Length: 176
Image (cartoon, rainbow, N blue to C red):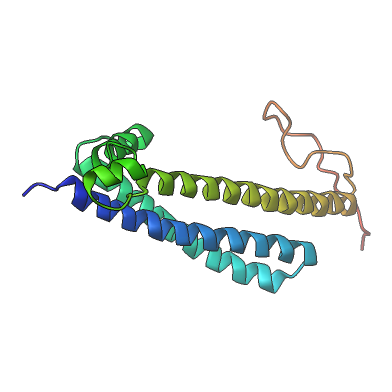
């Protein structure tokens, strides 16, 4: 039994629709995370983090399903394989005129894929922003710890060439 392009198109449309919902939810979660970071709301960040992780796992499952579909149909791996799959299931690109020629509604496969890529790019930008805030705060805490240890200017352990710095700035807080 061989799969027809229409069957694969329907399967791919389902994957893209699920992905669209998950990406929208992820974008909202990342915006909420940014707000929680601004408010220093640790409980909310923890809750959002767990939900965000579940969405990312679901997106990874869908990506794996799409990749498996490409391999199963001998299109290969990666973006070129997906492009070949899209060409096979929708040779005219899902335009309304090509859909009319087939006698059915436009599949929207390519436009759905592009829309998902746009939302994913926004999610990446939000995640990068949130990560930069967390990294800056972590750096601030590390600098405070260095001051407490008496090594305000020294890097934590290793130099640029992987060599150990001499003293880590140990401070004698008293003796008995």
